[in-house]
Image (cartoon, rainbow, N blue to C red):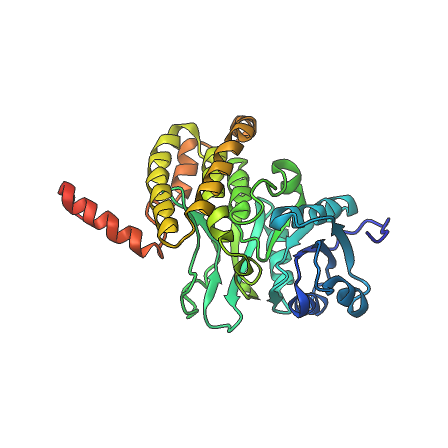
Length: 344
């Protein structure tokens, strides 16, 4: 790590990198060109493609933290967030190594948090690299125990151009108030990748912090560039992390109501994984998630004991439906309703 003894109130942007190549350089270039200048930290997860050396040569002002092995998204961001706290920064922003920011991306987010002290995180509009389709306009959590990014796959025609409160901020590119992170903690490294951002958002909601969507702030994201290289990666992490997310955060009053729905979805997801030749991977993910529940028990007690909002507030923040893109699940649910004679 480069030696930086001076503290800074400038926002800090943290990029987790794993063999990011030219995409990493494009990400950093877009941050160097921001109208609001950030301090940039790249946390490298033991890349083997020479991307760190290329980064050092092209942008020597960027601070680099080297992990000895691949620590995943959560473990690839947390060292940078700890460094931001050490530097005395007011705001810290995780930023994917395959994302490119509009020049006013950071300014819009900082301006919003400056004006709204009750908001702990601000999320931007994340578009796919073509600028036409939406990746995320904020993350939400359903009573089926499934998180989802609002608007994913939709053509961006301005339908989400209103500022609004959301459940959680996407880890692809969002700004967090450091004060909030000090209170609720950083990303849970047991998640490794996927839904750790929703977990952090859930803890923020329980602690009484708001999360906001700021549509004027825009980022372009090549979704799944890293995870898509590893067969079964998404299956393993989803089987593990949806269970952890639910158990840690859902209030006791609604734990069973969400839990039985999640069990149905979990079983169906496992069956689908078997048909795709990933049954063993799904079983391993499920086993790991079950094992980690013992570790999460103490965390759950601490989170629930310190929360500052009511059960009903959290229940009201959840989406009382399946995720919009869960088409197969919706078909199965409709068929079941017909069997039991329930009107749709």
